Image (cartoon, rainbow, N blue to C red; front, top):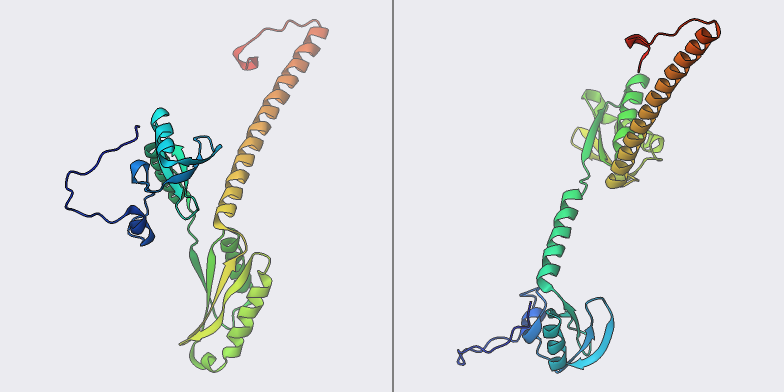
Length: 251
């Protein structure tokens, strides 16, 4: 990629200076090559080495000799900082990294659990285990207490139940949204202590470990069977019995 030069043949058209365009936020693209309208720059080499303050003409010449672009990376500095790089390759690699980051981004889900104010012990434990599983996986949990009939006159029952649940799962999550009344329901939101990505990575690591352990167990079992066959054949040999290989005693 060579340094590009030249002037427009339409001299009657006055273009806004690139610096003004950049400062007004119209374009986020950095100025490159002959669009850099300063007398000197602090030059950084293609491998990050500090070249020093050089005239813009010399910086453009070095870019042309190296078949690279001169890219203004810090226009607010005095003098501006410019780097020698393959700008097209840089933009492509940056776009690929952003795409990969979006693809690998973990989205936190909001799961929901519904309880009654007078829930029995067994049902409570079942609901609590579900909440713990969601939080361990890095998801938020919306807990809803549903009031019916006369229960609506006893909101403190729902409040105490939500407080109890929050205390029971505090090792995995925290109260992100305190209990509040919403019509005939009372709602609380619990947030996980762990990030979704961390929980996912740990789950994958546990899966790999289980597979490795299963493989090791299979290999150990094969070795044990082989040792048993060898011992049996050795015992026969001591008794003077001929050992005839058959498909049954071959691996």
